[in-house]
Length: 343
Image (cartoon, rainbow, N blue to C red):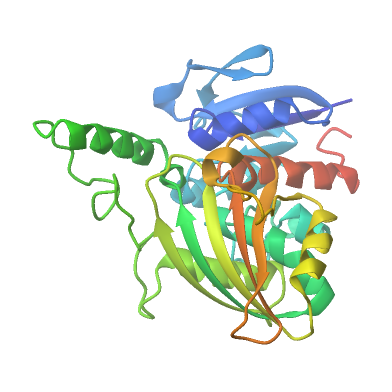
């Protein structure tokens, strides 16, 4: 007997990725419901070889489901996740609404899979921020080996992290650069994104950090280890999909670049492509689009600081940074004995 899923926000960038990844997973599935806002009711989305008609979030009975994969934004999640959970479905939420709730597990399966068992407190599991996910996947095996003291991270985040409207803005602004008579002023970003980089993602906080930078710090502590210090600078860049990060990692114990390279090659969810002897012997965001892995390149020792490494980390933010991680959480739940409502 298979499981019944609802995809909430099924017409969005992440929702469509969830449907694709779920269709290709090993989960035994009886039924999938595409759930969206009223304006999208009747719209058709793909699930493998099937076509699903979207149903209305306001009227859908979530008692029909075992698991709801939620990608409809923070405000909708705050309102609807408890309602869905009260119907007996476990919500795996992709927004920031529940990440720092002490009664809601924040899970990256390669890092803290056992934390899913905490879902019983609220019937909700939170999916971390996209930039945090790929970073902690890279950090986990290194932390287990040599104990991380401090991480300095600079991100290069694609516009898809801001949704479809942000992607459209990059496209329209790029065209307008070549056709000056067609102007497209910033709407989804504080400044022009085409042919530019913007050192601001989300709002500024009293500390001077942006909320995105705060998320990377707070979420890493909750997922990996509260003792790890993280300082971040998060930058939006004019690429459509794929986040990149430059990491400077200081350890308590000795670890060489060769040690790290070997260890990361053996670690789940990671692909090492690090060939400095070759021209282009590293991975860029465009090369990771559509892939499941987190790619690590440019592993090297920091000559200015003892027991410190630099590395370059790239991942598809719509996949591992959102939809894939969500489906993997569902897989972990099932593998750990979750039976659903009718079992």
